[in-house]
Image 1: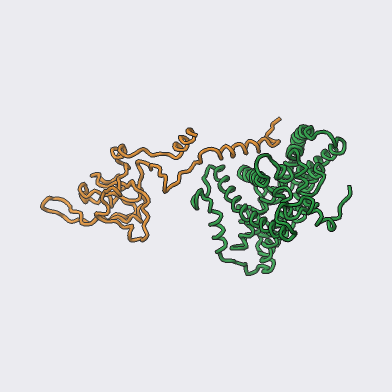
Image 2: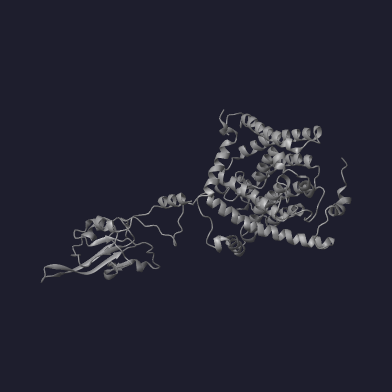
Length: 373
Length: 168
């Protein structure tokens, strides 16, 4: 395989799938920058509504239903409330770090959307290393979180931030390894090409990969059951305890924007992105993203929070070896049977996934079996 | 081989939460939907009957809080007490109902009404005509089964919800 020089091919790669949008490089850039920012902000509000209503109904409550029709304006009211609040900075805080942290946490999330295809070729930059870029950029948000924990000079914030860093360093590995499985099948790192290559959604071809990616992604973006870095009952609010007003709003935004970004990545990698019959592609993309997000809400309502040792054990003893095995099996399949129908792999891989999960659950122990799992 | 250890437990839990999503939630929207309160509710205020009251002040003696103040004068002609002032500080009242049980002439009742918050401390002190029964101040069936029979039965949220869920 020839590794293309990214620096040389970058403008060329953008021409591979010419967009039907108003022509010209800068028009394309302006158009999609506006689209992405609007998409993220509107989706965050929608997603907060979905989460609060969905979670409410699952817990036999109604959720917010007072503001506007069906409580649809609740996120707007919350946003206005939080923006009008006083901005408090602790006296002993590291002012510069404290001030920079929300921005550093927020910008990489927006940057992730630059390579996510809304429909064929409809993305800000069709990088030929799209998914690698996502892995690289999404880790930067951790720096922002750690800066927040460090800058507030509060022990709970620091504890939350340390937990966050530890968790993300661990969960990046299975995350990246499962992505490799997808890349082996699709033969491309470009997000758009991955979607184009998916005649069968990779959730079927890579069931184990999807499971591992979903778990690792929930941990990566601090969603429950892995939300112990901002565990309300233990650390008050984790790293953003000392934040208020606009800065807190930024962290809140990051939390949900990350969830949307991860849903969009899962959609692109495993659920065949914008592809689908009848409806326009961008609508398919939106629907699939929301469905993935809904599953995240669903797991959040169902599962209790894990301990820090369980979190680490799950990453290193369960996800990591399984991701390696998954990668190995995928590689064997692609090397030895490159030409047979992928539908055969679907059946085989589902059986393999079930067997491996059962086998590894039997082997999975914490503290040499002395601790309850 | 117990499959709970292999992720089935998680799937079972997920099934429970998703089934909750599609059924009627266990709530009532208070200001719009009101459930009937207990027929023997010891409501926020006392209801006093001027006709039946003899001014014996048994209620005032029974009150553990000393919230009832009664001033009487002697009517020698008819050989009885005249109630000059009957004052209850509902702010002190703990809704124990002892005064109602103590009254030998059934002249005192607990109230059936609720939402009786006031803006000022002084508004909580009720006296004389303010204590009489009226459509806004219905009488509760507490210690008076014959009144309780006429009041609507208490609705429980559980009954309402199960009824709703059966329809779905």
